[in-house]
Amino acid sequence: MSRRVGIDPMSPSLADCAAAYNVESFAQIRVAEAWHKYDRILTWGEGQCLAILDDGCDLSDPAWLVPGKVAASWNSIDGNEDCAPVGPGYHGTNVGYPSSLNLEGRRGLAYRNRVAHVRCITVVHLRQDESQTIAAGLRWVQRNARRLNITAVNLSALDDVEHREPTPTAIDADLAVLREMNIWVGAPSGNNHHTRGISWPACQEHCMAIGATQPGRHAVHLDRAHNIDLLVCAAATSSSNAYAAASAQVLREAIELTGYCWQRHGATMPDAMLAIFKLTGVAVRDETTGLTFKELDLLSALDEVCGGA
Picture 1 (cartoon, rainbow, N blue to C red):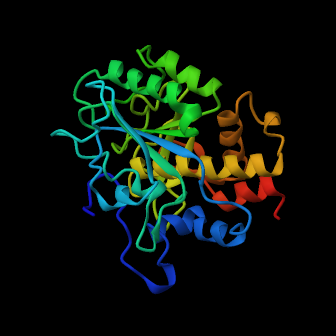
Picture 2: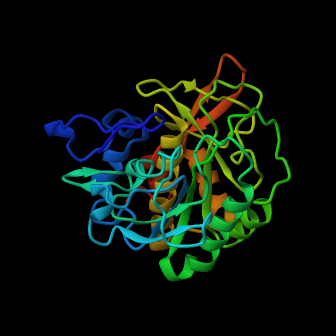
């Protein structure tokens, strides 16, 4: 498996951490602790499907040849099932590793989930307006959500522009529909060290904007602006977003299993899960902007829902 810019690298094989896709990020998110504590209670994404909307996926990659891992594929640019990347696209093949890898003893955060790969953009760092094909990809998710049990969307695109607030685009109505369907949709805030705004589509109203903290430190890095919803430890915000989507799937299972009353936290399940992540997260103050954010702590979120069982 090749390493691509903008995605957490897979850690070298270590005997004591052989299961973790990225040892340093997983330690700060407290993934291994959650796996250990809730191993006989939760299934780490089993039965749920994560839709990955990006610039295309090479389905011959070993990670996606694992039997049952890929539930479906779609190309909303050409209107067919061929999701293979076309140059300059490169990002979609690897961006699912942090969330979903389950290969040769190495595991992503929700390693038992399935994935649906959707090619909806030509390249992850947008060079032109591709909102129409993204909207078409989001509508594909709506149509297939029940059949595939899609519970979360990794919307990986970013335009690298410093948006201070949402801007009207073709995807807004479809994002709102997915929120009402209780499907988590998140996007990376960006890797440009912006302080006044974040990339589109993360800046949109019904999209979770996911920023990053430095591995090994509870400190904001990359984009850090008022419209970020949640920080997740990773070297780049594409991986932060992947970890957040997988964590949403894990938390959803805990909520459904325990009958936890999520409605007291929000009008929809994604709103409630974000509130729980923030309630139980680590407070991180950014000295550059004076803003305080919350950083994802998966174990604490699960303890809140499961009562520390």
